[in-house]
Length: 370
Image 1: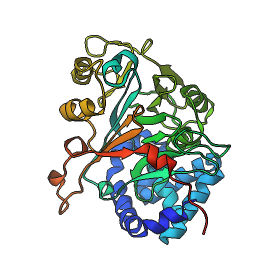
Image 2 (image 1 turned 60 degrees about the horizontal axis):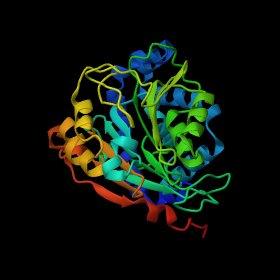
Image 3 (image 1 turned 30 degrees about the horizontal axis):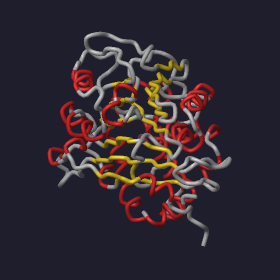
Image 4 (image 1 turned 60 degrees about the vertical axis):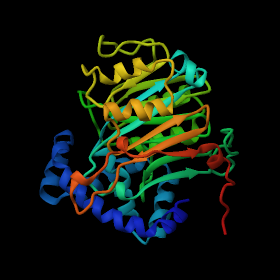
């Protein structure tokens, strides 16, 4: 797996990879303080390639062989080295993003979706780089998967990820098992941050591929060798619920609509609603909470993209809204820069959305070897 991906997107991957490496090298300075002292010194002396290779060495014992095989396939198809695709895959371990997310179900969507889950993933990240030139939605059909019913054998079920050309892993995605994932940085975490463990982007993709319920996803997170400190959102429409998770090496804290730490009036507890906004948590900005309260009961994709993300201005880089009842995903991506001028970028929350029929995508016959 991966060779077709690398072959089909060879031109885009070869154009994007060197731009990404140059961009990361110019952006790493604010994040160096979060790395081990020896790594800080190595980066100062030898640059970003050393940091990425040190990251690969730290995580490789925890990376499943199928991920390595896929990265090798992408590399072979694109005419690049495995090391370069691996570097691209692990850079989120060094640089995380501020984002917004919510899960709304039950009384929060009763009028619009009869209580079914609606989930938002809004990526607030720099848009002055090269990434938005080549956004891509990839639909995976593992061997034995049976389409939009979420069925499958040991290889898992069909699922999708929203990413950029050449990347392996997931920070945004929706599964045929009626589950979905999202994440944001947990900046105020004060515990340990070892680099030896599974990259969080690989773990999130494993949730999409293998887990059928939010409880299975939580168990996977709790049993993992974790590295970064992030907030994870996992939605499960079969159970009509969403969990917000504080994810770190030292601890995993799982929140629902009953136990999430509330700090009124900025963040009230509401039945069938869990959210993190783009600011550091806890946050005293009332905007997102007010908007969700305004549309409470009638939260759906259109209200979300027209009246929540656009007003709150969250989702600089990309936005995905998972509409489980309709088996659709609404996607928007920021526009590329023109002439290297960041002011020319139109943020994802201000751009048109594409409505994707995920049932049709998941029901596509799995590709066969030629």
